[in-house]
Length: 262
Image (cartoon, rainbow, N blue to C red; front, side):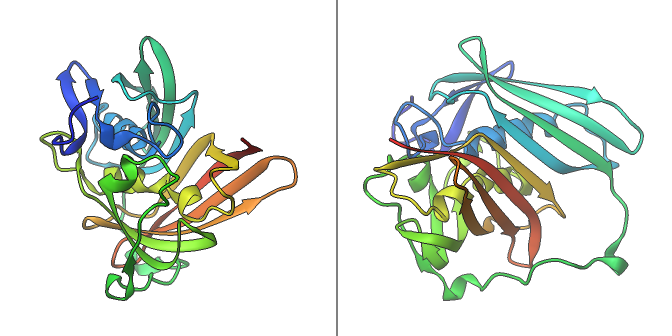
């Protein structure tokens, strides 16, 4: 872990290796990362794996194979299923020789469908109407302070559906400007935390995966997260999020949750 002056989630070491900084720390433990930064780092690896100008990333799923430690990581990407119009690309995140997360993504041929576009959610209320929010003191800090949070309605301490504008205050990789998809993935994993229905001191509501379907790449630094968590009777839950930029909806995210008492 690096000192407080580092303004990035990861420091590059070369050969697809990175040092995780304190900004990656998640709300459950100071030793483990929030999945937002690893999801964005996996997305970066997929983007850099045999890139093609005619294809766009349309769906990415991140499978969490274990807690992601705040330590040195290696990222590896590969084309799983090449194709002319559709191809599958994957990436894995390795810590101390063990794969801790894996992502698969579909890249699809881009074309102009603006004349038939529709069916999207209404735009979120503008940031001018939002209020700054902070995570409860009982949550472990790191990632939460590395992001700026403006509430449209609801907040971390108020159980139930919530919507917020969120902006990275640090880079993904030191020395690089994150693009729209990387910013989107850094935020999308926060749906279950923002719309939580349970007290984190008494309950765990940890996601086992994250899936994001993309309508278009976000524009600008701010990502809108309009989230709701549903809890079933058997220890499972699902957090779903409509994802926005300041123009309108850019995608949709979902997380399957493990729910149990501490």
